[in-house]
Amino acid sequence: MLQPRPIRVIRPPRGRALVLGCVAALSLLLAAPPARANSAELFGVGSRYAGMGDASTALATGPVAAFYNPAGVANGRRPEFHFSSTAYAAWLKIRQESVSIENPFEFAVGLTVPVPFRGRLKDRVWIGLLLTAHPDILGRVISRLPTEPFYPYFDNRTQRLVVLPTLGFRLLDSKKYGRLTFGVGVNVFAGLEGVIVGTEGASRSLEARVNQSLGGIFALTAGLRYSWRSLHIGLAFRQEFSMRFATDSFNVVAGTDLDLSIAADGLFTPHTFVLGVGYT
Image (tube, helix red, strand yellow):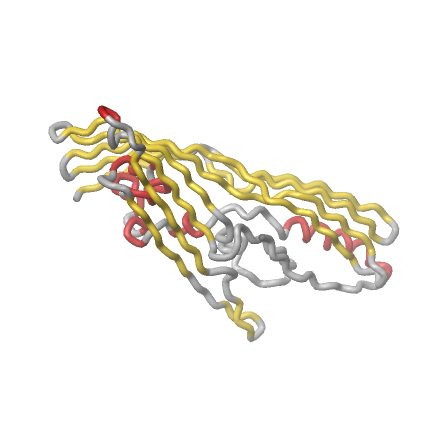
């Protein structure tokens, strides 16, 4: 659900209403970018693999492999359930007030199971799902005034649901030649789009009506992993993606129409390859 914050009302002199109205309308648009990341993409999933860096591409197994390298989903020995939580905090003193991070707690839950095939395909095809979310919200977007202090690295970035469905295949499983697995998955990103309508109220202040909706895009992830005795090598690919942010604003200020249309691509990431090597 969306939990908007109240907007402060500024009552300008009549002669400055048009200029200040333009600035206020533009600030409303720019202050509400799409919710486009979550704590998993900032800190990792699970304390064990989060501390390994890119080596997790070669070592992660079970549900968390859906995030690090989908091929690791098919590298387990038995069905596996994962649950972990992440909490972070910060305090910034502004005007003798402490400013904290909104929604600093998040959990991750996941499951991997083999498809019940028989014969040569037994235990060779695995399904995985990893979900990271806040306990009580699917997504939260906070619109702030330009003069309001906040944490831009965390605000509207860690407050969204992430779903990572994954399918893994065990291509080779030999004591002599090692194990080779392949995995493919989808990363679901949540975003925001809609319309803002602003008009002058009875007190000549700018009043806005906001109609925003959650949308999303899907990015492909894939990976290979080879294990031979104590040596593990992993290669992961993440498809290029960007979150489209488009908002139209129709405003009437001091009897003058002020229409704005803003479109941008947030969280742009190019095609990414990650190579990891681990030794156990």
